[in-house]
Length: 130
Image (cartoon, rainbow, N blue to C red; front, top):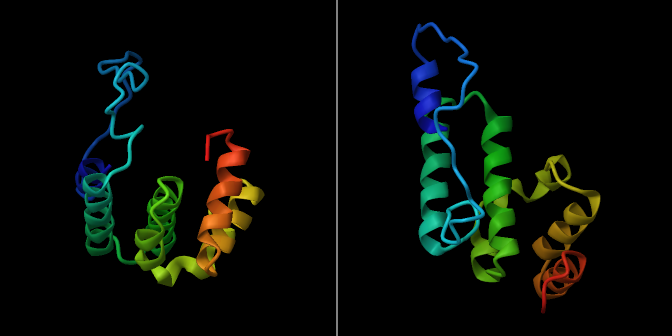
């Protein structure tokens, strides 16, 4: 996304081509960045947000949305220490997060010190083993 953002910041012409030139199969690739979450992934995502803050500081809604997405990834990956320390300034924006009301409630519980309970309920909801 960052490459696209940097390109679009210049006066360029964009055209649509009605043909796929790139196919990405995340189901086949178990190590796909879209299927796994690690400390390395977290650092890459944090760097992306830092670049966003530099490139488009006036687009706070986009920045907050990305911070919430990263924080939710830490929640899904059962990383309570990372979750609690990651972007505490967006905790009040949870209700704006584009996810189900149940996820927002669980996310809220996690931010007020009930991470373990919230995560167990999340696993039950998504039918993952606890």
